[in-house]
Image (cartoon, rainbow, N blue to C red; front, side, top):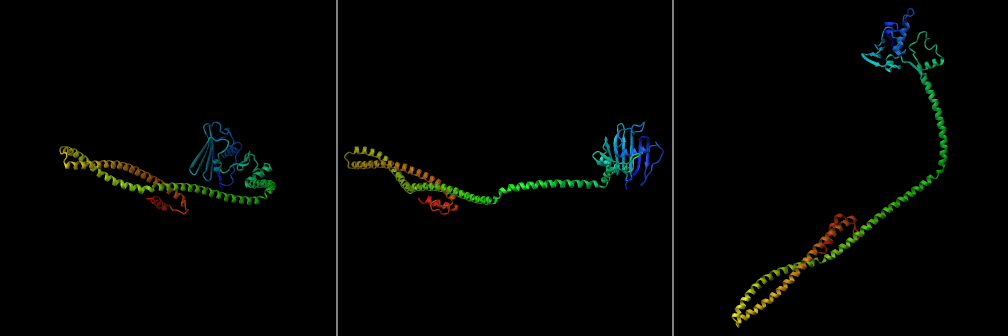
Length: 389
């Protein structure tokens, strides 16, 4: 059991410096009156509980005082007060702790160090059960019975049971009131819920309505898809009609190619005619020469033959000029035909591309309704676009 091993008072009341040592068990302090026995108890109360307040207990002629209590486990608690000092010191296990500017409340660390904290009976009443005053009756004998009972209850923990009983009774009362309130609330809600007895039938009707609504939504979505498919089909049909017209327009391409071949032959023929024309010019020069010769040889049979030949050459030259004019017209027509063919082929490619995109988007033939895969579209376009060549 822990006990106080020594008490040292320095400049406290009549004690300049007094050191008291105690033994385990009962210790008795005896001496004449007014020799400082009561001051020992006051010094012990001052160091443990910071009582009394003020500085009247400082020895006359001294500026400061100190009281130190040492326990058997080596714990030392010192209380010092002077003009510039007001503190607690705690030394334990080689550690020193200091608490300055002490007020009316003792630090919790100090109470924990000495283990003799006051017993709190209520908010404004505390008892120092470990320390009694001069002429004070032993252990609460002079206190009223109610106070003694409360103190004993605090010591043995009965107050915890009393508080628990009070809390339980309060909880029982509160629960009973809540139960009554809940009973009334249940009756009110049951009366209100009675108006909703037909909720199962309404729930069934709601489920049926939701099923009908879901089917209607499905039908609506299907109708919207059908409308979109119809529009796509109409666009595909229009594109197919334009493509058919284009194919029909391109049906004359073989004839244009034939004309181009004939035009090439005419060009070749024109080249030969041009050579003949050059030769004709040369013949014209020769004709003038022979005319001069013929003038010199008038009446000669050979001159007559030359004149006839010159007339024949002139006739052939006239025909060559006509052929040359016709060849220019044919070339112009061939150029227009080739330009038309190029435009038609460009339009054919554009229409074929659009038609292929429509076939891929539709996924089926717009005329027979057969399914069409994307990899079949190039063959179909080749058949449509190449069938007219």
